[in-house]
Image 1: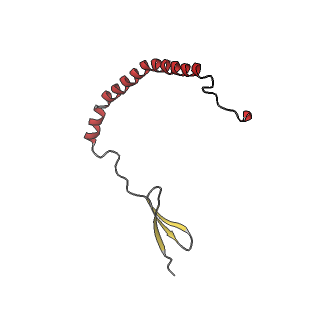
Image 2 (image 1 turned 180 degrees about the vertical axis):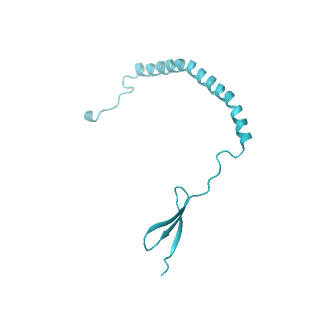
Image 3 (image 1 turned 135 degrees about the horizontal axis):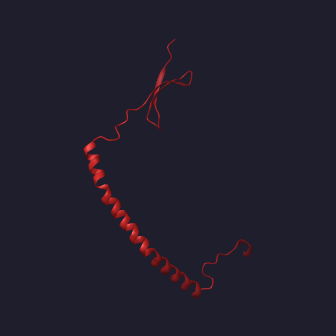
Length: 99
C-alpha cells in the first residue's frame, strides 16, 4: 500500500516539505534556492567608493545637530518655565487618591 505524500511550502523559510499524511511527519525537506548576496562585484565596489562621502555628510549633520542641541533645550526649558509660572496647575496630574 503506497502512502500518499503531499508537498507543503514552509511559510518561514520557503522550503519545500513532503509530509506523510498517515504518519503526520515530514519525510523530505529541500531548501529553497537563494540568490547570491553580491550579484555584480563592480557595482558593489562603486557603492563602497561613495561610502566615505556619505559618512562625512552624516557626521556633519550630527555635529551641527549637537551644536544646536543646547539652544533647543534652553528654548524648551524657557517655554515650559513660562507655562509653569503662568499656570500653577501646569504639569500636575490628578492622583487616584485625590479623586
